[in-house]
Amino acid sequence: MEWTQLLKDLTDAVQVRNTKVAALRNAGAHVTDLAAQAIAAGAPGPALAKILATMEPTIAHDRPHVCGQSPVVPPLRPAAVPKQSTETLPDDAGGIRPVRYSLAEAFEEGILPWQPATTRTYMRRRSPERGIPVPAGELDGQTTRYTKDELTTWLSAWQQQAGPANGGRPTGLRARVSSAVEPGPIASEGGHSIRSCH
Image (tube, rainbow, N blue to C red; front, top):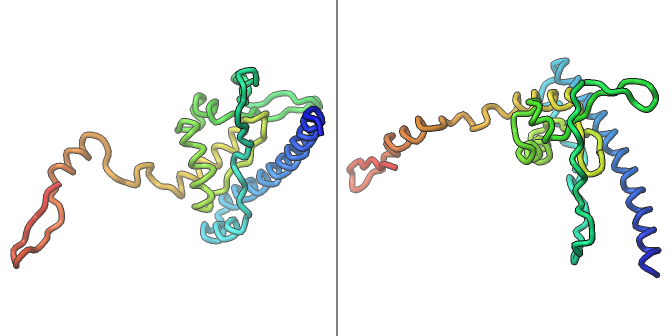
């Protein structure tokens, strides 16, 4: 089989895959919306987590690694999308659709408090571990875009479940000073108490 035919077959396979991924994202968005509505209606967290725990995991990023790419091959990252300034935009059918943000744009706009890499960790790995519903968003090239409502609903659920970002530990200079001054645990050696220091 010639490489040109293989590339045509690959193009078809990628299109089929993208169609299935889009369907999965739409189903995920529906699950996220229902979970957010359940949380807003006062559903108990353990019951919600039990239901969400039965979901099959999805692979966050499955682009194949291509060895030996030459400098002629274009980069796999899409060009930056210009920022959108309003909450709704006209769609192709003449209606109105909500503005969608990448994680970087959401951080820049102040919708999310963390850099994109941190948000991805919280969304893709830690939220499912804690039973927090994750918005599916819409795939735009290789960038997933979310509405402001999707992000704020997820962020609210995350903050309720996660508690303080540092686990309630003191931070900054006060933490360093107190840990240097606070005595450590008491140990006993030969019947005498010995207090260890850090």
